[in-house]
Image (tube, rainbow, N blue to C red):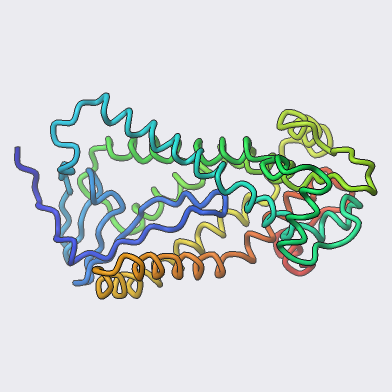
Amino acid sequence: MEHEPIHPPISQKIHWQPDVSIRDFKYTPRMQNFRGDGALVNWRSQSPILPVFHGSAASVVRPTPPAFVGAPLENRKASFLFDLALVGILRTAVAPFQRVKLLMQNQNEMIKSGRLPQPYIGIFDCFARTIRNEGIFSLWRGNTAIAIGHVSAKAISSTLFGYLNTLEHSQWNYVQILAAGGLVVAAMLFLVYPFFYAGTRMVNDVKTTSNLGRRQFNGIVDVYGKTLKSDGIAGLYRGYTISLAEIGMTTAVSAALKPWQQFWLFHLQHNNLAMATVEFGFHVCRNLATYPLDTVNRRMMMSSGEAVKYKSSLNAFAQN
């Protein structure tokens, strides 16, 4: 069965896909891709339905990926479930580093609230004090909520984009592509944000000699119960707007860096170590560009349930 129009060659396309890393909700969709000839290729160029723009003409891309030609539905479902499981496993594997990162990132807020008597000197001091006061398994505290958030984000975004692919629109302009991708990201983030909020609060709930080893929260349900009692539903979404801004900045930075990344990957394609180094370097650059927004977002989460809260994202920026 023929599929028209034919996919443009890979060499003519420059794909970009923002990092999801980390930052917990960086599950940003593959939105627009710019080809070398200046044409705009839609974010689902590997499957139907968004149009490929060539000057003023538009046509619908309907390729079937070779890997899925004739593949039974069960295999696709199994592959999708495997991807979800892999996300959860990877998040669990890096959970100790994630906790130390969040503890150091939010230590000023914990000192203000009296939960932390003195700041951490560095990464190794944070690891050592956490293990000494709470035990080695405490490095995975909050991972359940965060892992659920990541897996849910993957599943929800795939489902929503899959739904968009079923819409039989023959023409999509630039604004429609951006709007569709933006709405999907906003909806996905709205659904999973409470998980990341709960994970952040549990990660930063430390035991110290000053608080006699008492926890502020006893689990995910306790986080939700206390937050809803003190701040209502708004408490679960404090920092949501700055999170959307962070995803937008990640998308913009990824688009700006992608040509350079593709250039170096092309010239280093026979050296796997060099390619991995390039990928890691650009990943670090994206995270450095958005880290201030991530910090503000986390600190706004930490203010839920506290007597003093930030008035807005700008107010949080000014005070940090």
